[in-house]
Length: 210
Image 1 (cartoon, rainbow, N blue to C red):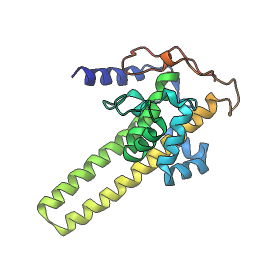
Image 2 (cartoon, one colour):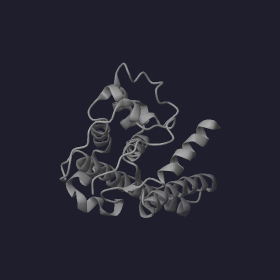
Image 3 (tube, rainbow, N blue to C red):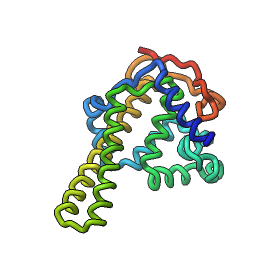
Image 4 (cartoon, one colour):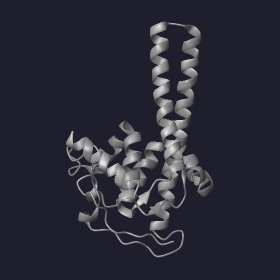
């Protein structure tokens, strides 16, 4: 119960962050179209590379799901972080993308815009609708309902992978900005103790360059 409340408090805190993403989800395709296509077809591989990059290629910092899930710190990450990360991105792809997102948000005080929240919320609602329709079709046994549920499931999968690819492109562009690839100063690697987690209610004071 306490852990769930901590997650809710952390999510609420992110809404008060001052900075915004360099590009929102609706503009991610325009920001880097080739990378967006690559993340659509090779999502887990891109997630692996982005997490390494988010950790400044220092895998000694790696914790499963970036420390945001109950399994974090209990998977032997310190012994073989590369294998654990590979397992995470392939078996828990959605969580791996979300964890990298939270990691960047907490490090740089980035809030998610209302538009992005609506897109992400729509994706989740569509997944729930697809699940409910599949269950109803299975129970009722109606052929037409079954076909409709399959169509909704297909649409849900398309939206899910599209949003994830745009989200990963958004993360990549943000780290390009962090690393000075879009112009501006290169941000220094933060100390280990400044990596924000659930048990750190107040994020480090970081203001991004315009």
